[in-house]
Image (tube, rainbow over the protein chains, first blue to last red):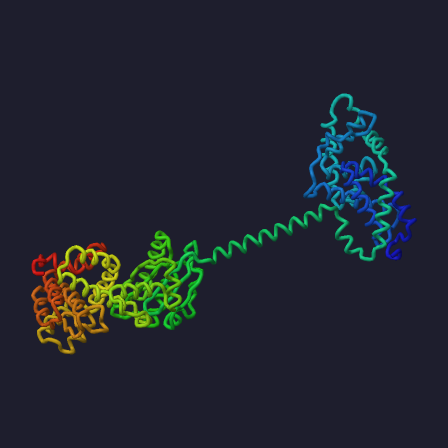
Length: 166
Length: 414
């Protein structure tokens, strides 16, 4: 039982979850709106984490790995055959600051492949090579995606008040 | 933007509730030894399960529909029986393809042996069967053989379509094999099929035998069960002529005529077939020689050589060796009529009119009927040859025998 995992006891499980739950939640937030889906992702992702036999090189490795797993899982759910399409506009974004709201709304309305790059680049602050490795793409691909995503966001958020964003 | 993005996301935290739930879930699942199974069911969301169910349903549906379609394809909606002497029955499906082939007698088995007719078109199947019959010697070289194709269905349109295709197929086969024979088409209702199956013969043959029985109630199925189609037909023609001449003899009024017509309609085609086969035989053996022979031979009267030669060329009853022109008779009333009919034909090809009368004289008298018919025949020899080639049943029908009489204006002589 406990021997099977690299984490072992229930305490370790709890600790790990605590450590990463915020990140997972963030990623879920960008991709999904449905609470059930979020639950799904959490359970799935952490179970996979604890079932993994090979130990991680370091914390960074672990985090990156988890990131990728989470993003993939979110994308899967988005692509799911039975998923009902939820309109983005209906979702209320809970940010007090209007600009924050706008930004988040714009990002959420991006296609999945843009979302991941934006998140990893702007929030996690990975470099493009790191992102390329994490997502298993060529660097140039990441550059293009990033560029395109920025274009779209610029259009979305265009307006004098938002000029300073970029 | 970056700062806004960051600050916004910073605010996103996982609430305790979800953490607890996840905790519980993970702990529970880790405890389960059977992780693999769990992974299969729970790792993906429920959607995955739904996907599987959906795919399974689709698969079942597809299987069901194809099974249904296949069964429908294989179900015969009509049957076609091909009888020469070998009797074969083909099951036809709604797309006019052959879905089953059964032999009804040993000859039929021989003909079907090793031949792939199932799944082919009616035309091709009949073609194969007739060719096979020809290969195995069931089609006589002299063209006297009659191939009967009978469609069994309650729908006349389908029956006609099937019959026509079958005929085309048979004709092509004969052409390929450079054989000649007559193809006789008919149709029967499905209920006759059950009758026929009980007796162990094809409905086509049963149909013919029943026609025979209509003319002569003493005939039993067993007698003709294994007879060749051409034999049965000849008998029918014989009996019919006999019946007709008898009627005219007694000079009944319209009743007899109507009776005749009734029979006629059934047996018209048969007569036509018989006469056609006779013609084929004539053509095969060559006309000129025939005519001369017959003329001469008739004078000689009844030499066996006559019969031998004539029998070949003349009437369909080659087996019965009716003599044709010489009317060497011997064959009993029925045959005389035939022979007289034949006589005409042979003589026609030759052209000489006198000979018929000669031959007629040499014929043994079997009764009034025969005389009349022969006279009529003589006079209307040309007419006969024409009508025999006609396709119109009515011509042959009422005029069947009577044409012999009427055209020559011999009615008075009746």
